[in-house]
Length: 259
Ligand SMILES: Nc1ncnc2c1ncn2[C@@H]1O[C@H](COP(=O)(O)OP(=O)(O)OP(=O)(O)O)[C@@H](O)[C@H]1O
Ligand SMILES: [Mg+2]
Image (cartoon, rainbow, N blue to C red; front, side):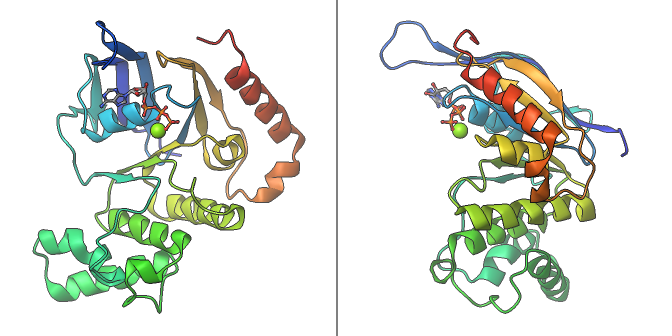
């Protein structure tokens, strides 16, 4: 793997005004994260520990109180289509078809129609939605909607994907096939991926490294390298080292002295 650094977050802290206290609520404390080209990084931690806040700061939606964020060596000051964001629920225009939703970003860039059509076909095929180009979002299953969300981000050729529990609302079987889809996208397109999840199995199947967070104020408690080679499949679930890593991550997450 190429080790070019794509993204770093250095000593980031963040507080939010609190509606029922005089003092702001400290949400993040000294968060440092780095992501190299093509790496998949999972961020796992208790509910409310600040994972989505980290993603918002990485995307450029929120500003940190302290610390700095570099993307391709330049400070992050605003959102960019080079850092594509995928949320837990598909964010689609209900009045657009699959193809129109996927084409939207390129249309805004006023690219040539035949190029847009060509790219749409490529990304519709990448996420396995051939034959559904003319469907509207409410005519699709949850997994298919999420595949449209992923395709409409990927078509912008982001260098980085920021994914906030993108498969959390899917059934177990669809979730596994979406994980395999993401692994194959990662191998084909090589984006750097920051992937938030609550699911330890999912983190171990997808990630090259896992950052485990503490409870509020969120801190990076431990960084774990995941040693399994790729391509990976769910057969890893029966692997002894997989079970060992899962046990130690769960222990970190449920350790009540972890704040
Ligand atoms: N805009 C905001 N204003 C005030 N407080 C906020 C804001 N955004 C987040 N918070 C607070 O920051 C803390 C962390 O929220 P965040 O959404 O980052 O957690 P999370 O780790 O993503 O949780 P979950 O796993 O449940 O999605 C919470 O206490 C939340 O109330
Ligand atoms: Mg969240």
